[in-house]
Length: 271
Ligand SMILES: Nc1nc2c(ncn2[C@@H]2O[C@H](COP(=O)(O)OP(=O)(O)OP(=O)(O)O)[C@@H](O)[C@H]2O)c(=O)[nH]1
Ligand SMILES: [Mg+2]
Ligand SMILES: [Zn+2]
Image 1 (cartoon, rainbow, N blue to C red):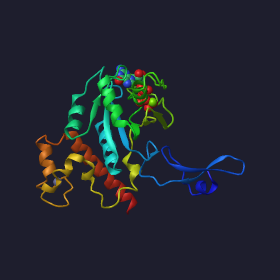
Image 2 (image 1 turned 135 degrees about the vertical axis):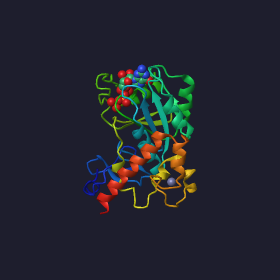
Image 3 (image 1 turned 90 degrees about the vertical axis):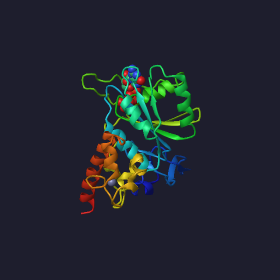
Image 4 (image 1 turned 60 degrees about the vertical axis):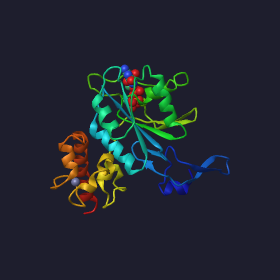
């Protein structure tokens, strides 16, 4: 990288488009990072078209809050999102399938050890000509998914999960773009949480958190108060729907938890 870029601390991310020149010693140097349309902070990737949220039904167990935060970040950054539910050969999880497909997300139930060919074709057509980022906890099967999608072409390193600890062993160490058959897919190290706190610079004072929950958007105009926070207000349509099980309990509780978390972040940065 050119000294000036380094000095300005504008480090390139995986997924960046850059200008490269030759210096007097004929070494390639990055002289400019082109404008990003978006970037994820953890995993660190720029110009993302689609987030592939990978969740395993078993070892590690699914974490609903994490799924909802990843979906919220995708909405915040206006990135498409799909969900891969892996290890369905060992255990099913209809709850996850039902919650997320009922609010419009495409959820694929996958066995990475022997992927269904129809599912494989559908996924291939969904990821083509896009920069796709795999995200999810260590051991959920992100790397296995790339191997199973491109079986004869890849055999990337995967690792047994620890049954005793119920988690993966952080096998993938780097964020790396894999380009094959017109698909760009980014393998990433596993994180137990993607961390909304990293996005505090995006979360301005007026952000409406309910917009990050797709199914809330259809109903929030029916709340009695315009600026309803859907936490304890009388006449709140969202709370009413939650009580009638028309909005899922776990989605509502993620919203509640996120509201609290953002309130704390705001207290600290706008005091
Ligand atoms: N039975 C079964 N095992 C799977 C499936 N997907 C992945 N595994 C196993 O789960 C373990 C972890 O898979 P990896 O692909 O290394 O997981 P990862 O998400 O890349 O993990 P990190 O690189 O540590 O973040 C391996 O032993 C895989 O064989 C699946 O669909 N079914
Ligand atoms: Mg991996
Ligand atoms: Zn409300």
